Structure formats: C-alpha cells, structure tokens
Image (cartoon, rainbow, N blue to C red; front, top):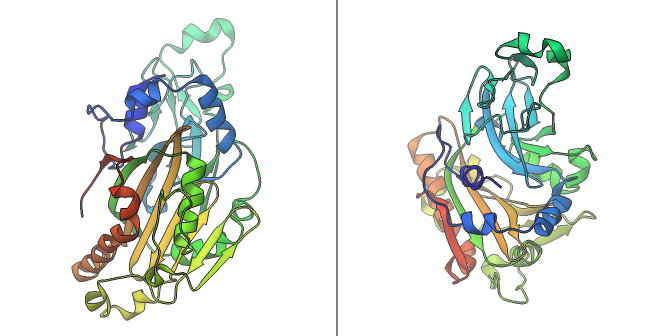
Length: 347
C-alpha cells in the first residue's frame, strides 16, 4: 500500500501539490490487514458515497480524487461540463493517473509511461506509439474504467459497482437533500475539519443517529440530551436513512441571523443518508459529515460547512457564527480522549 497516496487523499483543504506532512493515520493505514480491507470494500462496493459539493468541480478539467470502497477514484467535469467518474488507475499497469487531491488539467497523464487521457476517459496519446505496433494495441481499447456518478441537489455521489438508482438508495433522505442543497444555488466550502474517532464505524453511525434524534447513545460515544436538542419529529426509512426535524433550530447567533429572514427559512433538519453521510441544515448553518471506517476500531470524519458564492460579508459571518455553534452538539465526541484531529482549518 502506498501510504503517501492515502495521506494525500485524507487532506481536507484542496491543494495543487501533495502534502509532505506525516499524517497521524499513516501507521494505522499501513498496518491494516487484508481481511479489514476486504471488509471495507464489502461495506461500500455497491453503495452510493458522497464525494463533494458540485461547485467544487466548477469547470471542464477540474478533478477531485477520493476513495470509495477502499479503491482510488476521481470525479471530474468533461469538456462539455458533464459529470464523470473513473477508477484512478491507468489501464496499462494500474498505477494512479492522478496523485494530487485536486487540480485543473486539459488531459490526465499517467506519470509512469506518459499515457494521456481526456476528461471523457479516452486514451488520446502515448509516447512512442510505434513500440506497441507489434502487439496490435489500439487506443480505443484502453480507456479509463468508469464508475457511476450522479448529482442530487448540489451534492455529487459515486458508486464503484452498478447498483440501484441514487434516489432509491437514499430513500426518504433524497427529497430533503434536494431542499438542503438546491441545485440552482452555487455553494462553496467555508469551513472544514478532519477528525478520527476511536470507535467502530457501525457504532459511530448508530449512536450519532440516536444523538440527533434526541436519544442518548448506550456507551456514551456521543451524548446530547435536553430539550434544546430534542427533535420535533423523526422519520426513519427502510434503508437505514433517518431525518430529524426541528421546530426551533439550535443556533445561538440569532441576533445576527435574524436580519436574514429569507435564508433562515432553510429546512431545519439533520439527516443520516446511507451508508455514511450526515447532513445538517439549521438556519444558515449547512454542513456535511462524511464518515469512513479506517479499521475495525477507528472512524474518519470529514466535516464541511458551506456558504453561497458571492454572498455579502455579513451573511458569511452569520453562517460562520452558526457553524461555530455547531461545535456545541459536536463537542461531546470532539472533547473525548478517544477523538483526535487529523487535519483541518479554522473559522
């Protein structure tokens, strides 16, 4: 396993070059057993996994690398602005084509032998093509292998194996995501953190769902009780999705937010969308939390807060105040000794 590539994929702040910092998860990833890797692939190989907010891929050639089912993938915009996804592996020898977290390229070039691919995944050029004539190699026989991609509202999802429709997979959460991230609004990330929690992925997802529904987790991994966090109603679907609705959003920054009546009418809810996404919209605070298993006893959380591109500074400040207030419900597991900051930014 190439740990450098995993360290790069765990960076939350987009950058054009691979980080040279040693990541706190490097040793754990390197020592992960074959059995654990097989378990992780089994959990997600048929699932739709949240990758990014759509405006992250704002123009043709913009790409973002990630992992789904413990496999290297990337999503991009093609030359017509369409959404594409591929396994991040050159069909020649299987090495990653892209080694940065994000970037903007007219063509994707494998650094090993220089094979060049278009944003549509076609093999368009290779050095010394005459050297392949003896084996009858045809460029059209060696495209990048695609993965399924789809956009729901403003959120981009990927799936490495053909499966059910995205909306069907998300169940009752799908219509709420449409309202929380309207496709016609141009969002951008204004806040992000990456954290690790020393508990299993299954335990984390189960107890976090109980927490936001106003219930206390059995082992105290997360605990936020009291009327301030009591949901007015909780809906649960057949595929494990949950939507907790709130009449009174838990926001302390009401003095500032009160001047933005229209935006404060945002749907007030927290949803768990299978298999590993939590989304919250309360007043101007709009947040995604992607949860990924590292091994049987560690879970990785990637938290992003969003604002609208071009909004005024007062509105941006209101969002940040509301996002800062989110450290309230999140603080029980941030403050515990088994939780560590892997990387991230500040408000």
